[in-house]
Length: 348
Image 1 (tube, helix red, strand yellow):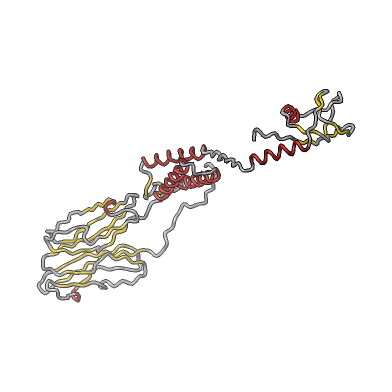
Image 2 (cartoon, one colour):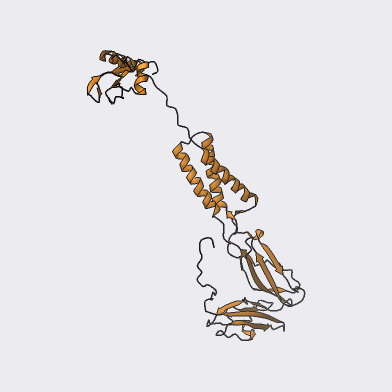
């Protein structure tokens, strides 16, 4: 609308200076110089007389009302159908770009150090993926200039919250591996034996291939009849260690077999029947459980580790003897000492 002359009507009160002349404002002077001025009815404050604006002895002539209306109507008719495009507001990405850069540097550092994963002491893999996804999504929106200032500020806050969540997402150690399986195994003299046969190892985070499994065989020899203690030591990647002992009994070929002699753990006062679940058979498959003899004693009222010896002789005169461990544990809850109240000040 640069070529439209709009005349202004001023109805103001002005104080005179000490020369009894009206002071004309800069705006009025500019309007006068541009011939965009309509002045009448202004009050001279000291006398309340109606005067025109003046500058020194210069008298400003008034424009007629009809002239002003004509110019306004002409301007309206000329521009009433003109579409004036709106200039989009400039979005400030300074802070969000700075935050994204800082977050990426931290992320790449811990990633290169192998500190993102599911193990104890690592940053949560799930939260790391959440942060990276959010940053990539925001970066794409910035590149395509699809964010206004309001949504930019929202994204900035969301990224900052997620980043702080990531920094505090250090995993705790998981549970120790668990081992299940028969604690006493019987094999024939000379048979080959797989020490993992009948053993199941489970961890809350690692597969069996990811765990370190050590088997201490001692003096085991499948060619020499006897009872051997095999020790299993399993460590997961969190550093949790579980130990397990298994008895492998090597018997003379054709000797009777005693089954059901797993290690037993009891609590003080529990009932215990030494032959419960125990069975013996000879080489022909005949049940000779009634011929089993048990030596040793278990006092279920006194905690401790007891050893029982089971033996059976078949009609061929062949004998099998197996040692069984029975553990009696206390019913009392463990006591944690050294937990006195501690008071600290911020920064201690």
